[in-house]
Length: 211
Image 1: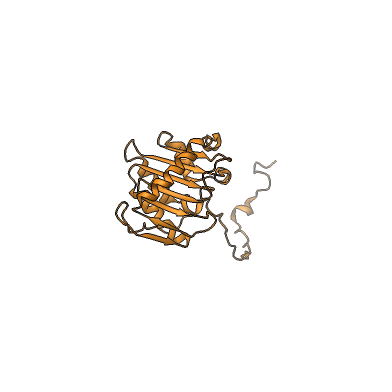
Image 2: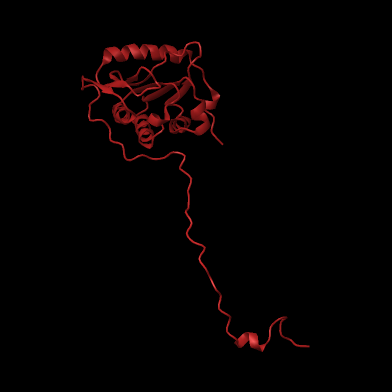
């Protein structure tokens, strides 16, 4: 009986392998999924000074709104208050906005960011950068759900310190205005915000970590 392994003989060790025919099946396209938070081009803030620029700036598009929102947040030194229908991901769920809010909150211990939202379901379900930030900096940032019997108005606005205002009368539209030194109007909006905030609901879904 031969000691060679089964199927092996002298010829298999010396004979060259037969050529293998190969035909390319063609080209394939690779489709990667879209990122959960698609990034835009680097966003530049509007060139106006909080507390100094007295003019009101009319706005009519998302592209016009974003630079003003970023400028107000970056220049705030004490307080930011946001009243929103659904946390407006096109405006606030942006990397530049998250970075600006983080820098604001870490300036010193007195900085506070409060966000009042009428319907947080979409932000909770899909995730939102400001939700993640509020869960990390719980002592400086808080998000509450507006009380259904006292929503505080149907408009959307951002208040920066005592003089900055970004306001849209209809949150479904982009039309609005930005003001960098309008303390009288800001006091009116601040009183509305504080009243709605004190009646707002502490929604546990806004604070619990997503698994």
